[in-house]
Image (cartoon, rainbow, N blue to C red; front, side, top):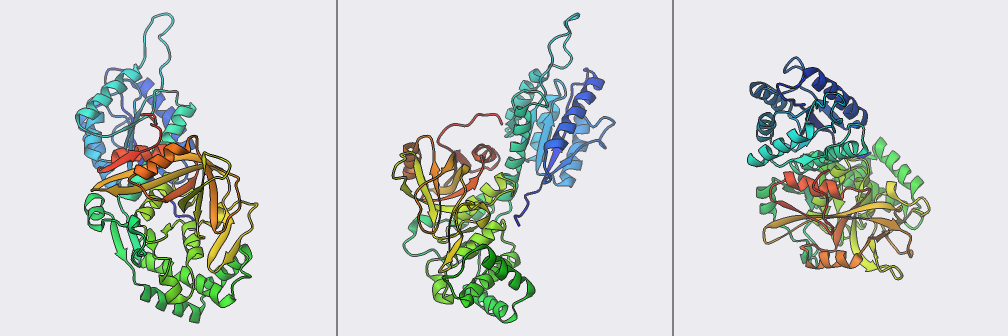
Length: 464
């Protein structure tokens, strides 16, 4: 079962003091009704109905009452919808004090009254004022283009913002379990642990292979109830005929042991040395274990790629835990399609995103299947000379030649641009993929992560 990425988002409507409170309340109700209808179960909405009679801010002093409440609530994101022109000084101080991802937007106004020519709200005008004040305070913010509350533009933009908040929240509390040093030939996965800690607060936690081996031995001796369930589950889903049952049991025990080690160390992802460490220590390859844990929402990167594990968490958070990631090599171009590339690895891709047409087999601990087609987002967090970048791009899974291991053929509009991007980087051949379109969310999240620069093939719109 995937980890959920629950977020608390405060919705703090604003109005202009001299404009109609009745009209503002009407707009507020329609906004909250729509948000609560579309938000999803992972999003908790916090209001300010206890701050004043209307739950709408236009008074500078009352803004501080709201700030006190929201800080106590430990919100993850802040949405300030303008119910009319709004009050830009209130927007500015909220953004300055709360220091969480911030979204501004207001519903599109009707035309002037046909008889009197009067306008009720001038909402868009006020948003221009609020954005200027936020920039004066140097507060980063997201924006949805002025649109109707029931429009696809608003609904899509708000849900994207929820993903942005999820990414920023996940990045702020990262602990990555490191199991083994990098394989000797893999200089490309070198990372700077001190920089990660000091720039971003990311902790790398060494986990001993000897402790894991001891745990595996204990699990095999005791075979707890859940062990039997997991063993049967794997043997039911996956053809394990090429492996003896003792080896399959060892794989299940390793899944137990790694899960416990990560939980004990409060790690939400891991990077492990899969080439030689586990074959030498235990006589098995851990590829299926990587697949199984990633499928549970605990991403594991191969070849001790710490940056790959970080990428996995960011990508999974963009999707709010609704689908697992997969950790892949960029390997070869499609023999007939110049714009398609093989995303491949020995056997760590999650079972739940397997193509229904692809048989599932286990060979020497390595899963063997292809992934389902559809929209795909590819990302990579990486660094060079103390600068950190997050690349994100989108394409689609397509049919292609069969190969060994776990794989997916990935098509984009212009592969040569992608190839140049990864050559001149600073990226390597490792990427993280996920089904769905999340590149814009990842790009937007970088606004709220100091020291992380968004990177992409094509520029994204400035608004959500």
